[in-house]
Image 1 (tube, rainbow, N blue to C red):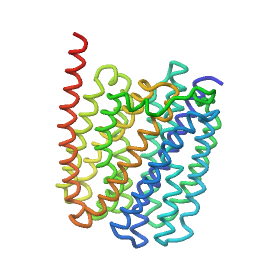
Image 2: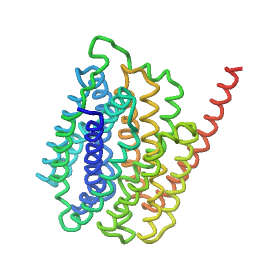
Image 3: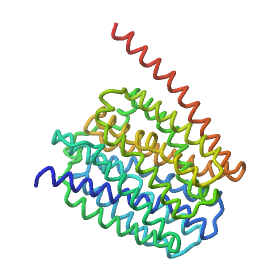
Image 4: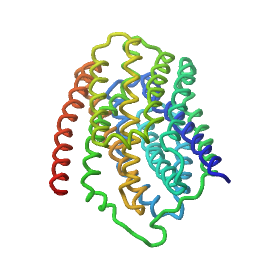
Length: 388
C-alpha cells in the first residue's frame, strides 16, 4: 500500500470525525434547549461530561502508550462513542441524559488526541506529508456537515444521534486502513507521565492554551443558544459554523511555513488577541447576521491552538509519552477548560446574561495575553542570558 493511499484514508477519517463533531457539538445544546432545559441545567450537563474526561484522558493516554497498538485503543473509543450515542433518545429525563453524557465523554474526548498521535507518528515515520493539510479534511467535514445538518435540524433535531452513530461507524472502518502504530511502552520501556511536568516550556504553553480554551468552552456551550436569542434559526446557525470552519483553511494550508518563520510564543499570543477581539464583537452585535463575519476569527483561535500544541507535543516529548502528552493536553482543554466554560458559564449566564458573559470572556483573554506575554519575554531573557 502506498503512502498516498494511507494519507487518503487519514484525510477521510478527519473529514468524518469532525463532521460528527459538527453534529454533536453544535446541535446538542439546541436539542437540550428544545426539550425544555434552562441555561443552568444545560451548563451543568455540558460540564459534567468533561469532568469525566479529567479521569478518562490520563487512562486512555497511558493505555495508548502501553497497548500493543494505538490503533486498537482508537477503535475501542470509536465503538464506545457510537454505541452510547444510540442510547440518548431513550429518555429525556435529566438524570438519564447526565449519565449518557458522562459515558459518551468517557470514550469521545480522547478520540482526537489518540488519532492526532497516530497521524503525527505516521508522518514522522515516512518523512512526508503535512499534518495541517490532513487536518484540513476535518475543517471541510465540519463545514459541510454544519450546513447539511443545520437544514435537517430545522424539523428533526433528534436525528443528531443516529447520524452521529453512523459517522462513528465510517470512522471505525477507515481506522482499519491505517498503518499499525505500536505503543512505545508495550515492550517494557516504562516512563512516568511526571516527565512532562519537567518541561517548563510545555507547561507555559499549556497554561495560555488552557485559559483561552476555557473561554472557548463557554462559546461551544452557549453560542448556539445566543445565536438563536439574537434571532437566528438552525439553518443560519449552520452557516455560522460553516464560516468558522472555513476560516481555518488559511492556517492549515500554511501551518508548516508558519511554524518555520514564527516562534510558538508569538503564535499563541496572536491567538489570544484574536480571542479577545472575537468575544468583544459578540458582545456588541445585536443581530444574527453580524455574527457571521465575526465567526471568521475562529480560524485565528481554535485551529491555531490545536495544531500548535499537537505539533509541539509531538516534537518535544519522548516517544514513550506521545499519547500521554496529547491526552494530557486534551484533559486540560477538552476536560477542565470545558467544565469551567460550561458550568461556570451557565451560572454566569443565569446571573448576567449571555451577552455580558462574552464581554467578561473578552477581558479574560486580554489579561491572559498580557500576563503570558510578560512570561514569554522573561523566558526569552533567561534563555539569552544562559547562552551568553
